[in-house]
Length: 352
Ligand code: OGA
Ligand code: NI
Image 1 (cartoon, rainbow, N blue to C red):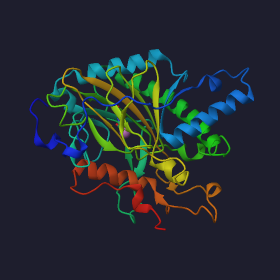
Image 2 (cartoon, rainbow, N blue to C red):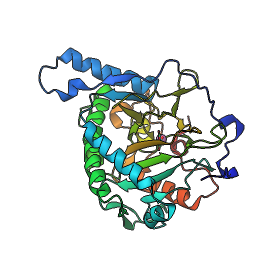
Image 3 (cartoon, helix red, strand yellow):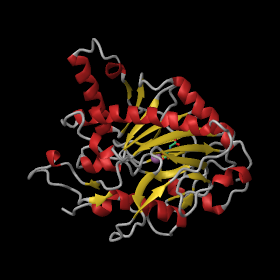
């Protein structure tokens, strides 16, 4: 990744601003009320639910502290990720993603058809993960995604699997808070994730000689339900502020997780909560590591606005779509670098 290939160059209007504004940042939410089972007053708990509601409505993003994920586990996966990416390209490519297996190592991802300044290693939580065999709407055949585990570092597999289970636990707790904040029973979303298609991505953003022209990840929205991101202390994640459309940096907070609403929650909530655009800046000196967990439902989920949240005054804004077909479509266009726009939820929007 030494030379700056034109494939990495963003159009002028999408280039980052090197001195990006700090301003009012994404909310920080203390989850301790849901961790300590005793002595939580109803008022305290309701306050937490209200904070989640406000954050989802105003930002689509928030950070959490006192989330219950042991710091040691995060340090372990971070260490394993650094060791993996420090290997030669040849060694990393031994676990390269391919047409059949969408997990593994990958260094040519494009977002909106511009190449991202990063390399990644993906693995799914469920092994195997069951998905449709193709994106073709009428093809009912299913297939398995299997993880490609590297030989080095030898404990990477176990560390990743353990960390994945922690992410799932936290994700369920967050979905409970989100359900409550939408006025629904706490377990309203649980059933959708029984055969989850969730995955974790280890991201490595190497130093970039032209950080003013490229991005680590171009502007995008996350297609799943919820994302739980760990970023290191370098920083670079930017969120598009809903109030004025400015790109705002998410300041690294030690041991915090960054949570964002994905497209599926936007549809389930019938636009009460929106999936917000974000992107990643790179810099010329420091490499950066991050670890997003994408909480995704079972492939057979038909995603549509929840009936409890729609009525005659507030009719469904989307028609139902198959999550399995959506995700296989995305993975396919990604792999083949089709020169077309990715499938987006607005393609399912019902015109008013
Ligand atoms: C992503 C993403 C942010 C980051 O991978 O979808 O938004 O900080 N990553 O790496
Ligand atoms: Ni993202």
